Amino acid sequence: MHSAVFLIEFGAIILGLGLLGRFAGRFQFSPIPLYLLAGLAFGEGGLLPLGASEEFVAIGAEIGVILLLLMLGLEYTASDLVSNLKTQYPAGLVDFTLNALPGAGAALLLGWGPVAAVVLGGVTWISSSGVIAKVLGDLGRIGNRESPVILSILVLEDLAMAVYLPIITALLAGVSLAAGSITLAIALGAAGAVLFVAVRYGRVISRFVSSDDPEKLLLVVLGLTLLVAGLAQQLQVSAAVGAFLVGIALSGEVAEGAHSLLSPLRDLFAAVFFVFFGLHTDPSSIPPVLVPALALAVVTALTKIATGYWAARRAGIGVRGRWRAGGTLVARGEFSIVIAGLAVSAGIQPEIGPFATAYVLILVIIGPLTARYTEPIAQYIARRRTPATIQVPSPR
Image 1: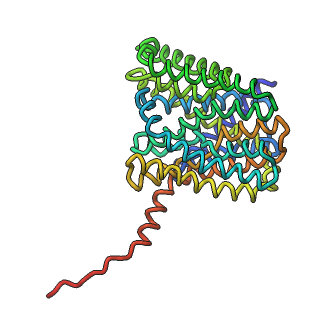
Image 2: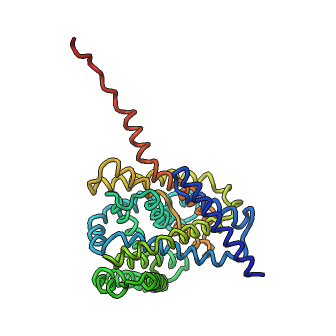
Image 3: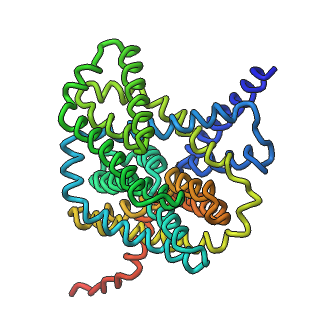
């Protein structure tokens, strides 16, 4: 009976996602907001809470994030990554300043204390790599000139999490400086080792993975990705960073073959991830914190747009590409929820959980819209501000 209920629930989820995706495709917008609203409907406090399939959906959601980052990494080589990081690190500093400080300031204004300020600063700082990777694919912008700038900022944020998460964990646990330093050193060493292997031995890894049989190629690439992601997470480094670096390490025909084989799996599990995000949000906890969360969301949406615009301008991208870069970076997601979850588990500030959930839900719904419409809106405003050309009649 349990097996039958699981199949019915999970089948209904997949069918519903397919119908929502078709609906979104008909009106030419990203299906991500619809997936999130579906998760709210089936989650705790929703219209029809799930039971038997929730654990499987949780695992599928984690795989979805890993595949999203793997596919994003397959688009670029290790040399691209290194050159982008060398040239774009100032954008990472601007990103931190413009987006972490508003969150920290909001926590202090709400009277939550300095530790909560560090937590909320992380929530507002980190964009959602999973959502943005999906949006870039949906809008067909992977090959755009501004996409490497967006990718560089996301990679800098993800790598910064290897430093930030051990720090925040130590702060929340109240451990000594020595214990926190050891945790941080392990995280940095693991991230550096994975990056070194990806850059130095990428060709060797590609030869090892390469196969003319699509079945064997799929199994080896997927297994290697999940293995590295799991090891990275075990060493206090983001699983998403590990998956991204596996994608970077693969190149040439292997990358092309893996991309075509894994694209359907990515789309399936990515949709499950967004549903899972909604499942763990109780709709009744959102209204009390909606107004301050909305105000902070508006402020940090504007600061993210400014970040992307500045970084793209610095990279020599045209005006339209600058606006697209800024609008694409708005969405927050998986890392923000992880950070807030650590604070809730530690009992630092009970309001952080629903506040972060409301904040992320707002921006994860608005994010795909800003990615699509920031540039045309900016162009429209620019045209309205430009005085009309006076037509001088030609002499007869």
